[in-house]
Image (cartoon, rainbow, N blue to C red; front, top):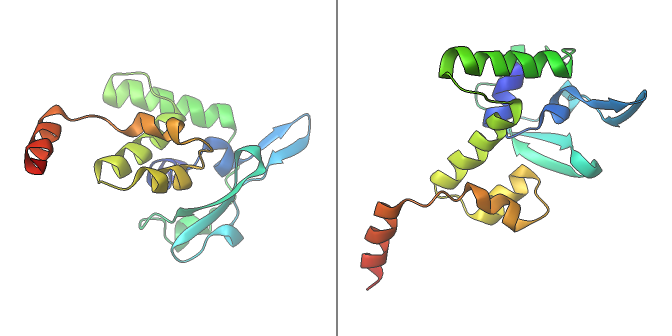
Length: 146
């Protein structure tokens, strides 16, 4: 499913993919084809902030031509929650995919400020939750310093 790919491999919020309306007023527009570049995706996200995220390698022209997605927010969230229960045996949300994106970047050694930029976080301490300490690696790297 396209939305899952964008959530996990581009770190996009559900509202950045399917849009967000309140009382008939568009707060965040749906993702459309014209925002998809060769290597990146331009999005208008939370707080009307613009940001650029990487275009997933598996996001091909067929996927691009399916935009904009018309699935309802609640339907997409329920699909992800049910999938998590059935496949993983645990409760997950669409936002869990975004957390996976940031965690993978952190585990791959990407600098925290890059993850912050890609995630669209205004505060570095928000991004800091993705730094999962690995005690064995910490001990090994500390011994390399001295």
